[in-house]
Amino acid sequence: MNTEALLTMLITQGIVISFAGYFFYRVLTTPPKQEPDSFSENDNETIRKED
Image (cartoon, rainbow, N blue to C red; front, side, top):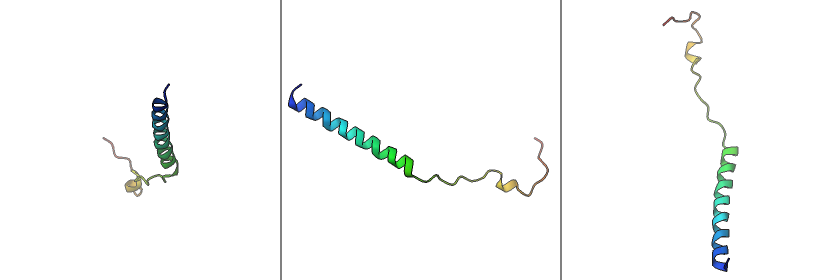
């Protein structure tokens, strides 16, 4: 393999690994979003509605 091909391959692999590492880090460090509780509006109701 000549020098230019080896350099191109190493640079491309470095870029791909950098992007993958960055997004993997973002996934692990991003706090989860607070999702609304679908039953919070029904807390005061004691009788279940029939369909």
